[in-house]
Image 1 (cartoon, rainbow, N blue to C red):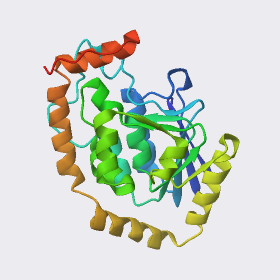
Image 2 (image 1 turned 135 degrees about the vertical axis):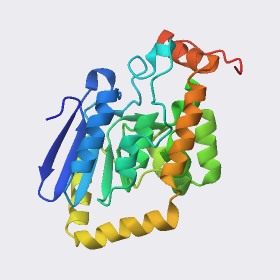
Image 3 (image 1 turned 60 degrees about the vertical axis):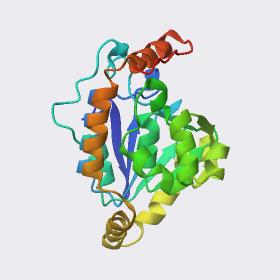
Image 4 (image 1 turned 30 degrees about the horizontal axis):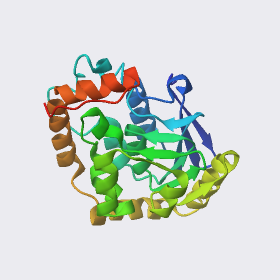
Length: 255
């Protein structure tokens, strides 16, 4: 059914895996569409999201989504919340992220949209948007501070620093860190424990947490979308992407 991801069911638990290991599970437009579709179709009592080794998700495919820095991506004429983010942020199904490797850029956004994150000792986390001359998508703005506090969130967002699994646990970004080979069994055990509970109560808890803690995702999504449309056209964005592809240090000019 899907080309870039797989979706399987184990009892009451659904398992979604991004499968583009040759590009460290980077997201192209098709991957976003498949991710959104799988989440919206999911009827499991708990959903586990992971990536095929060696990475969880390395964010946007800079050649296919960002045009290699040569031209801005077509993000549509009307500012809106990223559809895949909309599906995840409004899902009433509990979500566990099994972070098996690098979760950077939108890969970190994907991890943040899970209710619980369990990490392999090989996991790495980074909000790299600023290094590409961009602002983060809505999860980084709306969810990161809930996990690590406003000051630490600001530091991670404004520097683009990458943290390892041990630091991620120390600052509250992940629930637990386990040996790499034990990650999927650990995530499935946690998901099964959640799925064993009454599903209507679990869904109600998720809805209640959204009301108590979350911003207006649609309004924030429109702001992010319109802001990104401007930033994608800057010289600094083009320089950030080209420097990444050229494997050199970028030189930003504030334009």
